[in-house]
Every structure is written in C-alpha cells, then in structure tokens.
Length: 485
Ligand SMILES: Nc1ncnc2c1ncn2[C@@H]1O[C@H](COP(=O)(O)OP(=O)(O)O)[C@@H](O)[C@H]1O
Ligand SMILES: O=P(O)(O)OC[C@H]1O[C@](O)(COP(=O)(O)O)[C@@H](O)[C@@H]1O
Ligand SMILES: [Mg+2]
Image 1 (tube, rainbow, N blue to C red):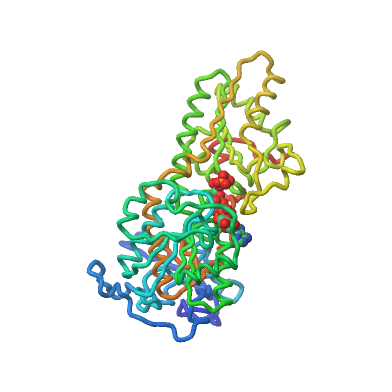
Image 2 (cartoon, rainbow, N blue to C red):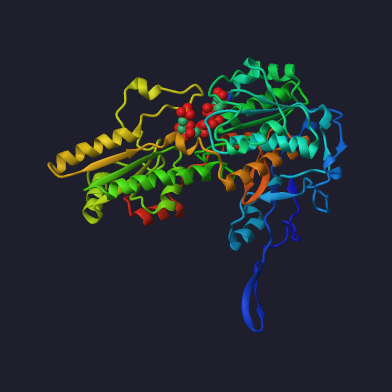
C-alpha cells in the first residue's frame, strides 16, 4: 500500500531549494523544499482478511467516564509511523525520483470501531522464555486494561509458557488479583523454555474457547507465535494473536528497545561498582563482571557507558584475543601499570570462539534450541591468573569475579520500564480489539506502532561495532579494537 504523504507527486521533478528565513534580520533556520519519497505502509493482518461478517461495534471507550474521546483520539489506518526518520535532504531528493522509499507502520492506539464484543472475549495471556523485569507489569496492565477500557471479564493466565496451553489449567485473572503484581519480579504466571507443540497448542486454544491471545516473550517466543498465527489463519479461526516483545538482552529488532532492559542495565551498575571497589582496593586488582547477553552485548555496552569505571567491555559482536600485540593481556598490563587496577565487563556470549570445548559441547542446546554457552567468566578469570603467574612471577595480583547473572533480570521493573510496560499492554489491547492479528506492539522512534509479527520474528538487534556507539565505548575505555594487524 502506498500513501500520498506529500503534495508533490512522485512523478514531479525532484527539486531541492534552500532558503533562509530571518527573524529580526538574524538567520534562524534553513528551510529546504524537497519531495518526500513514496511511503510503503506495512500491511497489518486483520481478522477480516479471512473471517467473513465480522462483528463491528463502536468502541466502548466512547462511554468511559475517564476518557472523553476528542477529535483525533481514535486512530485510523492512515495514522502511521516512519521506520526511518533520519535521512539527508539529498537522499530525499534522489528518492523522489524513484530510487528510494520510506517504510511506515500503523500507529498503535484505540480505533473507533472494534471487532470483538467485550462480553464474548476470552483472553489468554502467556509468558515464555527467560525472565525480564516488567513481565508482571505487562500481565497486570493487560488484565486491568481489558477490564477497565473495554469491559472484558473473561481473562485467563496460561501457566508455564507455551506448554501450559495443553498441559495445565488456565487461571482466571481480574484486576483485584493482579493489583500488586507490578511490584514483583519474575512472572506470576510462570514461564518455561521448550514445550512448543503447535497442534496441541492450537487445539487447546480452540477447546478453551480463547479468542484473544497475548503472548509475551522474546525472539524464540515470537517465532512460535508466527507458527500459531499461521495455523489459526489456516483453520480460519476468529482468534487474534499479538506478541509483546520481552527480551532482557534487547535482541529484538525494529523496536527502539525492549522493556526491562533499562532496569537490567541499572542493576548491572551495582555489580560493576563492587568490582571497581574490589579492584581498586587490591594491588594489581582486576574486577571482572559477567553480564547477560547471549548473542548481543547491549547490556554490557550500556552498563559500560553508564558506569565509566569499566576499562574493557567484551561483547559477542566483537571477537577478542588474549595474547600478543593488541590483545587483552597487553592492554591490561598497561592499565595496571597506569592505574594499579582494571575493570572488565564481559557479556556471556563473548569469547565463545576461543574457549576450548569438546565437539559435544559445541552441539549443546537448551530446551528451546538456543545454544548453551561455556561460562566465559571463570574461564577468563583462570586465563588471567595463568598469564600473570607466567609473565609477572611473584608479583601481587588479584582477580575478583562477580557474576550477577539472574540478579539483573529477576527484579521488578523500574519506573520507566513500568510505564513502558503499561503503554505496550494498552497498545496490544487496542490493536486486538480492533481486529488486528499477527502483530507486535512496540515503540518505533518514540511512538508506538504495530509491526507484523512475521517481521519481528526475524528482525535481530545486534550491536553494530561500526557505528558511533561502539566507537564511544572504545573512546571511554580506550580498549583495543582486537583487529589483528
Ligand atoms: N523456532 C521456533 N518455533 C516454535 N517455537 C519456538 C521457536 N523458538 C523458540 N520457540 C519456543 O518459544 C518459547 C520461548 O523461546 P526461548 O528461546 O526459550 O525464549 P525467548 O522467547 O525469550 O527467546 C519456548 O517455548 C520455545 O520452545
Ligand atoms: O534462563 P536460562 O535458561 O538460564 O537462560 C539464560 C538466558 O536467558 C537470557 O537472560 C534471556 O534470554 P531470552 O530472552 O531468550 O529468554 C539470556 O541473556 C541468557 O543467556
Ligand atoms: Mg531469546
């Protein structure tokens, strides 16, 4: 679908004119006229794509005593968010001649017409994968939002992740029950890895009469949700499914960041501070902190940038080596000579290529099929000790290793993440009530949008070691780039 977003048609000549506006004869801004490139709006699946004669009702928010819908309160399909908002004007001019397009997503929010009768809704909420701060807040806000905004009364929690659909009894939820859940870490519904059996899950959904599915989970969960979505479509069921992206590692793409990530980075500071104190208080002291981050180093990177006490940050996206010129040991040698101590932050997925392992260990997977890593923390600690004894025999040296692994994700969400969780939950509810399906809610450039779940399931978010953020880390730590000459 293409939107006419600009007065110039795409066939108009691409002219770029620059003028200067003045205020009291002082130039204040530059106005450039250019043709906005054509916009492609990502199609969002809707139940009406395959369910005939859908119910169409006015939104009950019209009658809410709290909301007074004003013109523009309800969003329509022409309300969009651009995926990329940064581009240079010469690109825009070039794009208008046909060499580029802009991608847009539907904005999240209430719709004037809804396609579910609230009295007939049977909503199911499930949490899958590892923990993340804010899971309980999302559940709470889904329950309260469905109840208060739309008058839904049949809301169920599915225990223990995907396997719970077919192996456990759902738990009836209401606002009173979930009232304090945002203050608790973890997930009150319980979660698990593995157990994804498509037929059993969709059969159970049908048998239980669920017609709205709120699936909270990470990249693996989203891949599972895509399969459920496709099966629901194949069976032509009037069931809407939405994904709410949860990942403490921040490894899901397109969205600005995942909920709980900021809380985790904040928690990591405590471990880094402790490592710093220990290292500073020793002779040739090294503080070593291992942080979560299976295939992405976002937590380590952000924790490093916000701490400023870190001398070296090791992430999965940037291979490192220990010995020789430009290696970790050479760098630490210099740092210890300069400062007498050093702090290293290592993401759990870093260095996996250089830790010796058996063929069996190379194949190891968890129940969800994620690779099981060797523990980089103790390995690095032991390598550091061996190096020092070999190169500096008899000299004092200490490595204090801190592994706060689960502590950074098993806590309740901080205030910012709690707010974020609420907006995510409300966005999901509005989209589902409007009949959208197979989508994920999330912030895109600061505004909440609906993204097709199939796109989210394959979109990764890795640290770009060529961009300014990684350069910033290196400028803060002055660590080597580990590019062997
Ligand atoms: N490719 C896939 N197809 C179907 N289900 C999947 C897939 N990958 C993961 N899952 C299921 O999604 C759930 C969560 O996945 P997992 O990788 O453990 O966590 P996360 O969703 O946090 O990444 C598990 O029940 C797992 O079996
Ligand atoms: O919870 P487990 O099975 O010990 O797994 C730990 C993994 O979970 C995470 O915390 C989050 O991973 P997911 O988002 O895939 O659940 C990873 O950082 C870590 O590698
Ligand atoms: Mg994952």
